[in-house]
Image 1 (cartoon, rainbow over the protein chains, first blue to last red):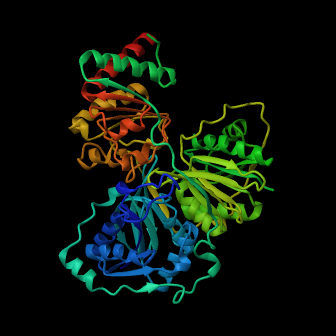
Image 2: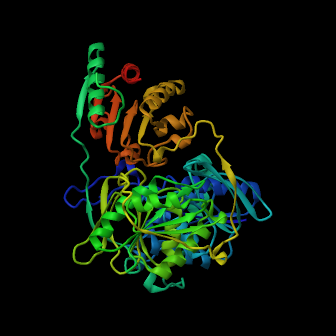
Image 3: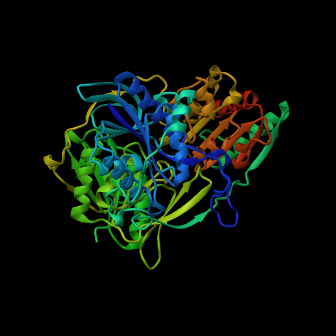
Length: 270
Length: 333
């Protein structure tokens, strides 16, 4: 079975600093990591490979340093990796990104399954996974929490939805986006790290991918960013100290009155 | 001009609340543009009397594509139907709920019709002069708000978080048309089959669609202590959420997890107890209407974003709060 895992390199969220002047993210000097939610997709892919045989290929679109994310995926156990990188891809929204990744995946040949994380922790859209599926006309199952098994070319799985878990039978090839519940990601191994160091990672660009130039990068993106604002961090709320018994009652009184005023609790005023 | 569309959602023949929330958003945009507001329902078994509620709560027209084969959300079939409707009727704007189905269907369809799509919008407005939809959304863990538009492609598509809008009160005097559109069988994609639902899951929670969420974290020290939160949530008419730390310790199941690797919620009230408020957790709650925090550490980041912060011990505060709420309820009864 050939499994492809599109991943994204993102800024380490706990270290994100904002430029108060421009309201944009300060990228310089920021640690980057594999999108934490993609680790679940990598783990799910590696487990399927262990159970059913085959290969796992990690693919990412980004500037050349994004190769670091691919090396991390190889260190976890991926067999292959591919970087999709070109200045012309810069500024792509989710529509153009899913187009470009879908074309790169097609270019790599036949596959059985594409697994992605639920969303990336920076853009937070969850749109690229289903977008790739739409470009490739694949069935898609999102929020997959459990893969029960594969038989006769069909996956049986459960997706986490509002009412519980929806159970689906989905034919291969298909695309799944997975949630954290699917499996705990493994750590990179020494053997994997060595393989990553040695691996020559192929680069796909406008030079070797058949792409419609009207569908890539900033120019090919239907959405445009008009402005970026930094929201107020604090709400100017009330802070009440409740460190001894009398203060506890007073703090709770205050909270009840506050919730009452906001219409959030029932019952009679006391 | 075919106007503003909002996607209604249904389950077991009942319309979901998000259908009405979206109409409140859509009504404002349709009025600004001077175009009709259409509620589009793909599903099964919703009766006409129920469809009239869509009109009463803001829609000018309802397009209902209903068939037993559409009872459950299957992305490929729903996408083919919606794509067909879009190509035929050319709406300017389509809004959907940022639910498990909305967040799957919208990107799939956006690719098919070459539309711009913006996820999880918190504000929607019309740009003066151009009539473009201005879509504002949080990104980078809620650290920035980006305003996005789609100047050259139609439709302009956006998803909106459940509970971030109040539905309009029903106005039974509103008039509108309900159009039943028969399912074109060639649009049914037979590839994926729904086997069923597992609802017997003990302790399942629908965090995103709850008005009140009482959440606990590492400060609760033990899984058993979540019982205290459950009682409080029940008394307040809400549900229980948790930080990643609590879920990773096995104190409560993943469906309860709030934050970057869990759910993003916008309830009317979020109360966090024993949660310090990591950036990842705050990203999941920042759009809550009211935030209340209970934590002994005066410097806990959750206190900084709270509307009402109690610096104190959850094991003292929560039982006291519980007693007071129960006493009030007793009085009412």
